Length: 118
Length: 114
Image (cartoon, rainbow over all chains, first blue to last red; front, side, top):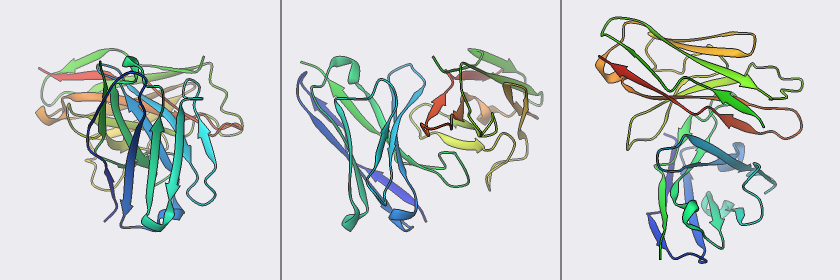
C-alpha cells in the first residue's frame, strides 16, 4: 500500500535551518509528483509547492520562495523540504502529499511539526 | 489574490444534512475551469483525508453520504445523514491550472454535530 513516512518533529532556533524528509513506498516513486503543504497552528493548509520526481523541477507557491528548497533522492524514494533562516512564523506542521485520482492529494505523510523558538 | 472562501462553521443534528460552500475569487483557471475541486476532512491531530475530488467524485471507501457539486464559481460539499464522526474541519482545494500548476486551499469549515 502507498505510504509516505516523514521525519520526526524538530525544534530549531531562529536563523537555523531544517530538513524534513518524506520517504515513499508502495508505488513507483517517479510516477507521481510530491507536494508540500504547511499548516500553521489554528490555520488552514497552505500549498507550498511541488517537485517533479522525474526531473527534479520545482514549483513554489507565492510566499514560499527564497528560503524554501525541495529536493530528491530517488535512490531511496525520498523527497526533502529544507527551510533556511527559520523564523518563529515558520512554526507549523509540514506535510508531504501525493495525488491519486486527479488534481488532488490522496496520500499524505503523517506530518512533521517544526517548532522555531529561542 | 487567489482565494477560496468557506463559511467558518456549520452545524446540524444527527441524521440531518449540512452543506458547505466554497467560492472561488480571483482565480485564473486558464483552460481548466473550476473543475478540479477537492474536499478534505480533518480531525484534529490526524492527517487530512480526501473525501471528494474533481468536484463530485468519491474516492473508494468514502461513504456515499458525502457528495460534491458546483454552480458557477461556487463548489459545495453536502453531508447527508450526519453522524457524530463527521464532526471535523472540512477544507476545499482547487487546482489553479494556467501556467503555474498551483493549488489553493479554502480557510476551512468546522462542522459540529449537535
